[in-house]
Length: 178
Ligand code: IMP
Ligand code: MG
Image (tube, rainbow, N blue to C red):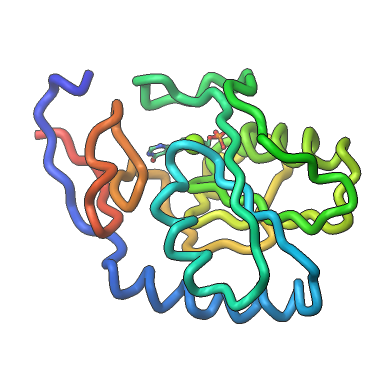
């Protein structure tokens, strides 16, 4: 499929992303005000750019950890069945946790991860997704904070890939086959 030629049309600029992250971080800071330490959990690999910008904007004592769940593979459709490929390094019992996801699409991935982490008895558990595609939802799941709601388009950039490509774009663009 990645052999099919495509172009990328810009949808959300780097400037818009930066401005939105400032707003989101003000809200996250208010929510976790007074925390002794916030464990920021990035879902690999798509959230790695978002989490890097997010934590540098957060004026809170934080720790960073990562978790990898299975996703699309190289396809453009969700597999629905979620497996944990790499678990957290640290324990989160009694801790404040913020889960960071790139996109909530069908909702299965975030739903699975939030339930898993909740079973470990964190003090507070919140989630944030850079993008949300509400049209594609299959289960009732929404992140506590969302950067941008987008239509049902396949997007890349700012950490998000199409068959592992285009993660290094500074903006979010939609894939258009030519
Ligand atoms: P869900 O389980 O269907 O909500 O899928 C969420 C995961 O699918 C996200 O973490 C992304 O990795 C991936 N995904 C969803 N939409 C896109 C897209 O438009 N481009 C690239 N990856 C996507
Ligand atoms: Mg993902």
